[in-house]
Image (cartoon, rainbow, N blue to C red; front, top):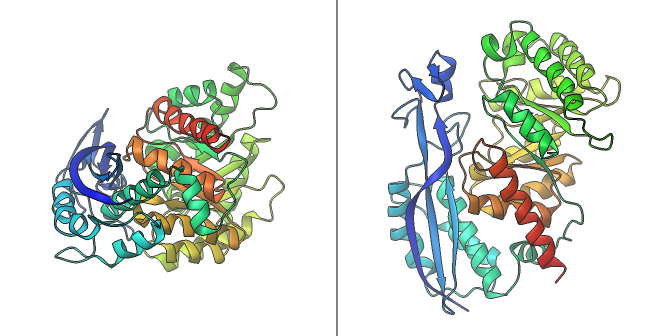
Length: 412
């Protein structure tokens, strides 16, 4: 079977892109309205609705498949590509991707993606968001041609055994931290709340007292919801470096604080994403490695560290995984670009004995979210982020429903 045509169209992302440095510098937030001057190149405003591209591939039997991609929310910082502009992506796809793949045989996803990696836009490499969209579309096309699921294609081409156990699904509440917890508890979500703990003053507290109070509230909320004893969710906080900023990156003080937080949520497992945010990858690795070494001396269950900042590429994932800097590495799929890199990243994590967290962005779309489910099941990733959006209900239903459909297809 062959590709008969490829069309790129501009679409909307599932949330917003935010200029993170401008937020930290004092951008004023009024509900969703954010005012102030952007600081990161490429941003027109501190907050903008996300843009994305959909790559539509038509097969010679009349089937049409799609792949979609754009920016993660915090674009243009910590080594990430700049804010995604759909018009530029469409132009690049029309000029370079469509002519290259029209007429191509759909025998091997890995061969097609190898060709994709060799292409460049007129002014340099493609944006990772465009690579993400195009590789998804090519993978879906190979799956459609072979009458197989995307997960089956991945397992076959990478020599993997499809996982029997579903990945844990984690959510992010956004700033609606309290209603978000209730939604997660109603739906018995595996890991929550994320919580967007991004400001020392308003979210964390000068000595971390606000996050401790929030953790105590969450534990009381489990009782109010009368959750069964066998429901043991992971309590996951994304701290955006607030622990490091509050405690001047002092390893001992940060360890003592995280131990208090872990004690607050016992007997549940605590995950801390991005406890520190350094100005370089090397500094980030050093701080994370030292902090994790200190945390391993705590009583069980030992708090788990999740790497995120400065972990954008396949090479970054390998560095964080082999250095002992994290218990889980967040594989931010839109930042890696080609899906083959996300697949390889999970395999690298497992090779180094580290958990793989298939992350992404609330700014993704329903199509990229569903494909991420197939990647997670095929590779045996331990955890996956529910997306798109910040509403929780919608993202969880999209991911769980795709899991249910996939499991049914695998048992056909």
